[in-house]
Length: 265
Length: 174
Image 1 (cartoon, rainbow over the protein chains, first blue to last red):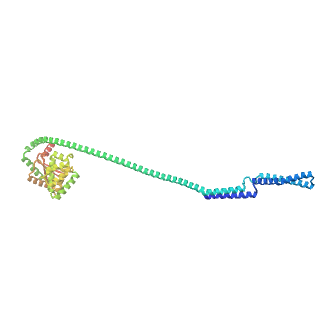
Image 2: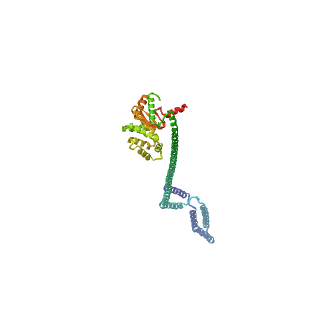
Image 3: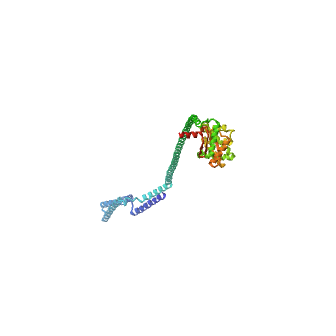
């Protein structure tokens, strides 16, 4: 920043110096020219015109007194010179009206302007630029701080978001696990209830079957008792003797042993 | 007979061998089995799962305590507590077979309408041994339903000399 300012100042000073040199080389400005010409005219009026007027008065007085021809000739010559000077100065004054360069300022203006510029530049460099630089640096620092703060807040927001997403994922996983556990527990309870129901049914069937079996056995026993009585009577009739007689039973056993021993059924 | 009954019988026989009283234990088991066959109420009670196992074991203790070997009482109590009362008859039969095999003999289940005398039992054992060609131990079961005579079962072979069988043959004849 500072280098560029100093470079710009150097360029301006160089341009002013070059312009000043050019103006000096070309001649005076309009103001100075008019001033000089006016001074000349005034001098002319104050001196020459008075001399001319004196000569004129001398001529007129001479004529009245009878001036010589030489004096008349000198007076005429002085008048002609005066006219030429007047004409010349009028021409020069008109020339002063036209500035040599409408763009190029006067050398003094350039010098004073340049000095003022340099003074102002020095003051700005000494006082203003450091303050402006400090303000810009402070503003830059504030902006950088704001950017850093924004980045930090964005990072914190990203972290919070990541934490939130992680917690959300954990919550979802936990919810899924709870649902699975509940489902498994429900399945286990259902299976347990079903198993208990099946066991109860099996017990009921077993008891029913046992009851039926007992009833059947009882019926068979009753029937066997009746049949036994009938069969006993029939057997007694066949065997011709009473099966209640122990001797008969002993004999039957002995007969069986004998038949087995003999190889008979 | 189920494999489970055979396994239980093997275990019972192993315990009895360890105690050195396989012969007596198998005989007492056979008697317990006969008692179960002869009592529907006892059999149903010991098989009823609604009756607590401790109660069923107590019934066994009451029935066998002091009348059978401790080994017999223990194995019967164990079988009843395990809920295998319905298999007890088969287990007893297999235990008897194991005992007989240990001694190189066979077992004949003899059913008679009356109890056999010792002489009759000896002669019947000898006759069955002669008929089968190998030594036979008899286990007598008093079964009035056969009316008279004897029914001997040796393995799958049945020698039926009962009055009931003769009546059946007579009925078939007619």
